[in-house]
Image (cartoon, rainbow, N blue to C red):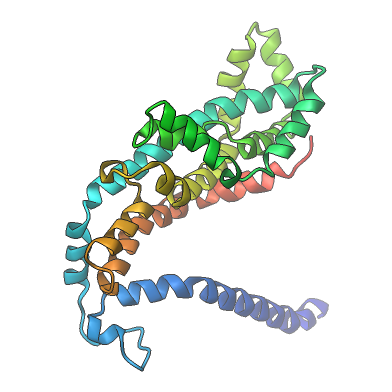
Length: 282
């Protein structure tokens, strides 16, 4: 009887929670929905006094054809994938050993390194952009993949994230691996990394999204369209000949953002696991 008595209130509470979450999701998705809608409209449908999400005349084919041809979209996507992949691989290769050493090894400089990491989280790329630009310019490294990748090769956020995750891992697992004769490199490669995939996936999403959407740094070091990343390519797209062709511009934006949406949908389970487990303390 008591269980049946609580069922209506529990159902009502669940409906309220789902309604609030659904409304919040709709608010956050509205810009993307508006972008999808605009990508299928003609100019006459975009600049009207009424706001209709469903296009009166469907221009998806024409707008996507313009978006694909006016800038070399395959080059933009290739550059984005290559730059993000290079940054991610280097960041993970550097961050995991650093975080493992700070989490599971005892040495005097551990606290000082932790302070430096926390300070590093407070320094934005904008603060170091000018000296980095001057250094790359004098080295003749502008307009290259090296200039796009090098400033982000060490991620203090990645080190901090992996540090919190490794602290939650049992020490007995590492001690057993050492008793089996594994070196520290072997422990990292055969014990730490296989158990750290949730954290690696979570960090990968953070890293790829940040650098795929980054416009500031490519705008500083790249003037050759052959090295343009997707956001910079959109800037060239508008500046070249389609400044007021918002249908084609939204179609190009949809092409560029769709890989991130697909990647997140495929990795969302491990992303949630990584964020949840990072907060645990062992």
